[in-house]
Structures are given as C-alpha cells and as structure tokens.
Length: 463
Image (cartoon, rainbow, N blue to C red; front, side):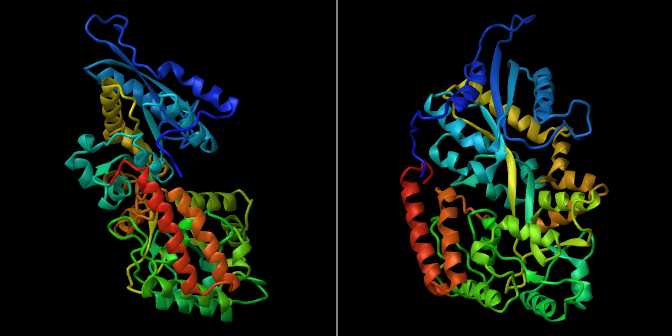
C-alpha cells in the first residue's frame, strides 16, 4: 500500500530522469527579460504519452509534448500576473510511479501531471495533490456530464480537471450474429447497442447453437478472462449486472449480498454452459482480444482506443476484416452498464503558493479554452459541446456522450484501489475452477478487499 512518506530507493536511471525536470522544481522570481513589472514563474508539467500533435498527429513535427508546449505559449501571452515558462516532459507509463515517488520523497514534485485519473487516484489520498474546486465553474459543470466529475472527485473535492476519456463497452462481430440468425439484435454502425439481460442470454445461446461451425470453427459466444489484474473493469461491471452497488457511502465493498452473489453465479453458469471460451482462469484479456480479432469470439471487451486500433488493423490487413460494432454491458434492470477512463490534469502540492496558483490557472486555461479543448477529439471528448462539434467526423462521439448517463465509477474513488485489483482475479479464478463456490469467493473478496481499503484509509488524507 502507499504510505505518506516514500523511501528514496530507485534505479539510477529513474534518478536521472527526475533530474531532467530539476530546473523546473523551483519558482524563479527574477524579472522577465524585457519586462520591469512582471516576474517569471517556471512550472514543470509531466505526462505519459497521450496523443501526438496539437490537434492531429499529421501535423509537421507532431509529438506527445506538442499540445502542452503550444498551450503554454498561448497561456503565457495572455496571462497578466506573471511571465510563465512551462517545461514539458513526457515519461513512460511504466516509469511514472517510480519517478513520482522519488520526486515526492525529495520534495520536488512536478507542478502538473496530465494522466488517466484511474492511474493517479492514490496520489489524491496521499495528500500529494491540491483540490481544484476553485477553478471549476458552472459552465464547465454544465458542459461536462456529472458522471465524469464523480470520477475525478475524492471525498468532497475535485482533484483532476476532465479533458478527454476512453469509454469501455462490448465489441461484437455483427457478421457472426447475422450468421446465427440474430439480425434483429444488431445495432447501427454508429450506435452503442443496448441489450436487456434476457436478450443477451438469447444471443449467447443462439451463437452457441446456430453459428455455422464450418465458417467459424472453434468459436465461442463471449470472452472471459481471469489470469491477472488487467482489464478488470469489465469483470467489475459483470459483478454489478444484478444491481449490486459494490461500494457503500463509506467506501467499503458491499458485494456480499444476494445481488452480488447472483452476478457471480451468473458468470459461473455462463462459463459452465460453454457460452464463453474455456480456461478463463488462465486466459488474459490480451488473449481474449486476439481471439476476437481472429473471429474465435463473437462478443468481447473493448474501449475507444482498442476499438479504433482494431479497425485500423483490419484496414491495414493486419487482422481479418469483419463488421465490428459496439454494445453496452447489460443488466437485469434494463439500464446498461458502462464505465470510462477519464484523462485530465492534476496539480501537485509543491508547498509554493505562487506556483500552485499559476499551475491551477494554466490547468483551467487549457481545459476550458475554446480552441484547446478541441484537442480532446484525439480521444473522446468529455465536453458535450466538443462532441457535438465533431460528431460529423466521428459519429460515435455523440453515442459516447449520450452513454455518459450510464457510467459507474469503477474505482469508487477508494484508497488502495491499485491493490484491490490484485485481490479480485484470484477469486474469479477460484469460481471458474470450482475451487470455491461463487458465494464463498465473493465473501473472501469482500473480506480481503475491505482489509486493503481499511489499511489504505489509515494513510489517506481524505476522510
């Protein structure tokens, strides 16, 4: 689990990386060149690779830092309080936490980090970030759906400014559904189809029974996996299919009720009926994705990036070509289940009031500027206004925006969520192998998971 203080033990390579940003770890209050009345504030902004270019990867010299360099230049020209210089540094995702831990331990955190909030939530609990409530206005709250704000809120405070997102849904092979006589369940090319749970079960059973074996040999209706913690979000959705809320208002797991157990029993029943790929306990999400691309699975998980990448691979001849479409995860109530990974900026507590203020102003600027917010089209826009503006270029933007009403916050914004991921998949494995009953596996997951949360709460500044 994460602790408030960090041991200064890291690889020399990581220390070298942290040194790259060293020049921006302190505010420079010297007069700016050519200015007698303004001081210069130097900020450091870090990000993991997001998108190339300011607005598009086809721009000359497009790179992962292009947008923020352009935004910083535009901001500095209009900012009245200080001359602002922003050092932008792109760090590899796998190096992010080790690098940040070294810098936090040394008292030299970056001013701003732009990242998927799912990966950064524990820094809010550590007390490493400052709230952003004061830079969020009513106009932003109106343009960005409440469910996105819920995802970036910890306790009563907003810690990330939503910019774009990566929604998770099902992907399905419409050609396979047609081959099994299931045309009426196929949605439009630019639609996220919603099936009732009863319809979904009909689809799975019909695919098993009626899918032509000569055309689709050794194919299965649905993909399941439990090898590791990757893509656990879809498994978390399945466990909510019968109405369980998963977390209570205090941030504790409450999966161990009739609804939660029923969901686990549904997974076991579906698996045992041969409606999924076999050996789920030893199958990874990457394995399922590969089987889906090779038309060995009719319905699999996807997110907006995986979906676009799969279509691109088809066009490039790297994967078999078929009619791929989107659907929501069904539930017993009829209201579909969907979730998303929101990306946005967080401001670290550098203990420097001036740099914190300027950092917040810069984050608000590039997160609200009418020109700059259009760059969110490189992912999926969180703003309804941007989604509407670009829906003619990407009609799925409108579908994703409409789907926002069904989002659930899969992390619950609880402390220790990264460790919770390690607790879930062994219990799913025990269900599929028959080592535990679904009810016992759920009991054990809840017990072990709540211990993780309890321990993490003791080290969280958010109560």
